[in-house]
Length: 346
Ligand SMILES: Nc1ncnc2c1ncn2[C@@H]1O[C@H](COP(=O)(O)OP(=O)(O)O)[C@@H](O)[C@H]1O
Ligand SMILES: [Mg+2]
Image 1 (cartoon, rainbow, N blue to C red):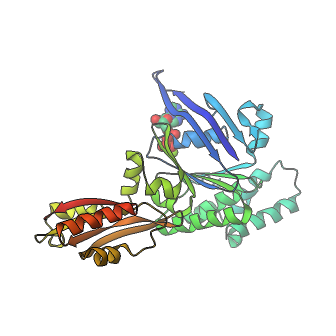
Image 2: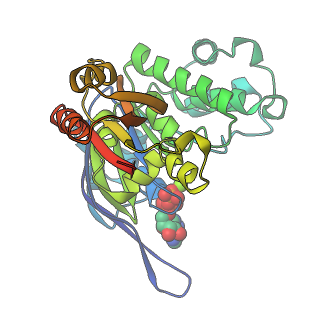
Image 3: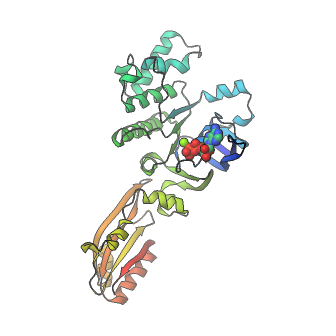
């Protein structure tokens, strides 16, 4: 549905220096996918997503949407192609002086549809986003979540095949964020629309994306299905994003504080287990205690669902004969569980 080939975008700044906002990005996004692009502020995400509909013309490279090379189209052709790419933003960008219905109807203005046709379409769109009773309200009378629903309805007016979402939930509270993400997921499965989600928040990716690209300094540094990327991160920045949601690293603070929870008796050690595989169905903790005759107490754990599979880990205090513990660790590693001995009093 979307193919980016060696896409780059360089801006001239005020002092005639240059900023390479996007560098040599190659991405393929399939029809009907929910695809995430995550990065910290300034990474180049907004520029990249604006290159998909050519709101920003790439300095280098080619952009294909649904088989059409957008970078080769004339302005009128491009305007037509753009109608099939909806976009929503962090700040909603609604017309304050127009009602909800007028906002949603706006993109249909020159569509050749009759007044009655437009009214029916607006009604259907408002039904789709759960705002059928708000058609006469003005944006100032709506909550943030409702405003974003209006923006979504407006973005869908021309029945686009793609919806680009640039930090669409970043101005919303956590509860409202979840309801908007749920709506996007519903639209994706109901309409088969391809959704590209730009965000700096891990939980957004976790909630709705099947595949993800991680951006840093204008470059896509890692890409793939969400589970593989976050279960087995290759780049430091990817681990940084995981750390924004995982509490496993709290173990180091507990040790530093000399918390009673982590004080060890002789013969004990603290280990961190990390699940890297989709099929961690075995009861690993009970298996190692039985097989290797050791005690394994879970201090805490953090297991999340990413791409429909559990990812995460456990912090354990293990007690037993030294060789038995070593054997248990080797056994776990052999099962593709990441094992790190964090503190050793053996
Ligand atoms: N129109 C512009 N003119 C000059 N520099 C820009 C422009 N738009 C973005 N940039 C620069 O490009 C880089 C990437 O910005 P942006 O794409 O907005 O990142 P993100 O959305 O990930 O926060 C930043 O250094 C930003 O200052
Ligand atoms: Mg941005």
